[in-house]
Image (cartoon, rainbow, N blue to C red; front, side, top):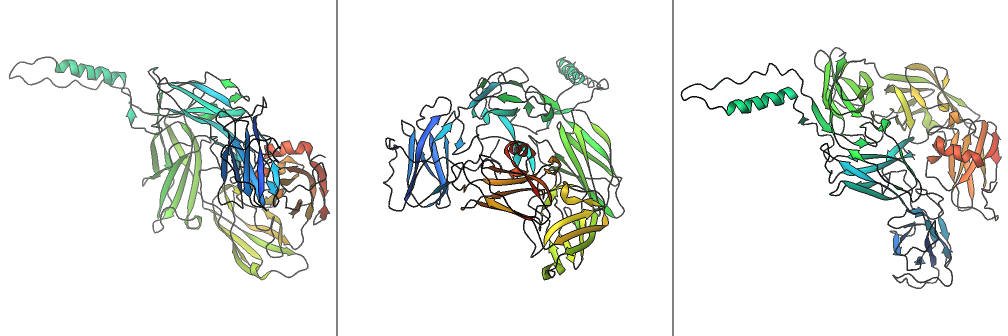
Length: 598
């Protein structure tokens, strides 16, 4: 998967060099007074064989840029002259999987090492040998397809968007040679969707002649070859009345193994560590494009702008296309390749620019279509006005109201789930004991960061509840489908607090990793849930989580996650196996010391 924001930050391997360790070939200066050393050895994870010429990198806040060395013939490396600080170490070698020090699996953060003045840390790294996926790509004529990109896509949780997404790992791409053969190596063990991506992906200016047109063209050639008598007019061209077959435009699209243009129909390719998977072959072919058309009701005095966007989670395809509805409301999108699409419509007054913010949009609508080589017609797109959410703000507590809340605009960091609609929630306007949010487009939203008042107070106030139409909105993914003026947001001046220290098996304080607290019930496991929290350990081994609602929780310690990855339900299933159970009362202060060995 391409290094997405979720992709692991090099966090890494550190240790005290054995007395007999060989000095690396790019000589390091002797350790200066007050400066430290990180050294170790890189070996093959399966055979414990030293790996020469592996690349080892160290990064940290005390370095202006990362440093890289090459391991010696015996696999050893060393970084001398490092200032006091916290460091991450990683190692890579062609044909092997890149690993971060302290990580149990590839693409995991691993451990951060704390280097004391004049200290020395040993950081040994073990690299798994990479897996291989290889095969052949042929053209529609059965000839080798040269220069075609083949990508392996893998799924990983995106902590920013709050959903699992597909991306290409660093070694997950290859290009076919003159025999049409590709070979991806250095892949981590796992499950992949593999696709051949043509160079002219999205080019729909290709048309296939029908059999009738070919016969007509051949007749024209034969007729032109017949000599005419001097002075006689040339015979009239043959009639095309017999050409009854329609000509359809075609295009080249990505082909997923074992031979489909739709990612949801692809067969995953599973590889084990060091496995060579042969025979992942592809036959490129033209696929027909389609016309997508329908009707939208145009409000009086307005114009409607439409867009169609590919929502394939693996290869989104060509960018969004824009169109306008006719006076009668008819809209058409031509030459659309196979895929899953979202069609959005926005109605604007004539005096408002296109692409206006939600508060300026009078009507809005969206629908989904699947294009599979046939024309899609008869779409009826209904428009509706944006929503307005409003209601009361209730303050619970003995302290005074915070003055800033009497009149303020509160940004809401939430965007629609999926990729079709980039417009986020408008800000909430708070005026005394009332709030309102105008111009809300219906749909399900995901918070990109915790709503204000959940993990950090708004002045002295904590958000305790948000009820719309009788439903608690903080205990499920945020879904807004209808307007209401009966919302109730409750703020309180007290909050629960769970804190403690984490010790390793030997009793020493752990200063690297996260404590994850999550509800016992999986229905609360969603992105930015108020019942799921992660806290990074401090340099004193402490953690603190505030404002958890009353309930049953599980608490786990891990250094195998990235920021916000603790919202991933798949990860929480794994952490639950070794977690400590905890009952928490409303606004209760609670101390819980932890050890990963429990």
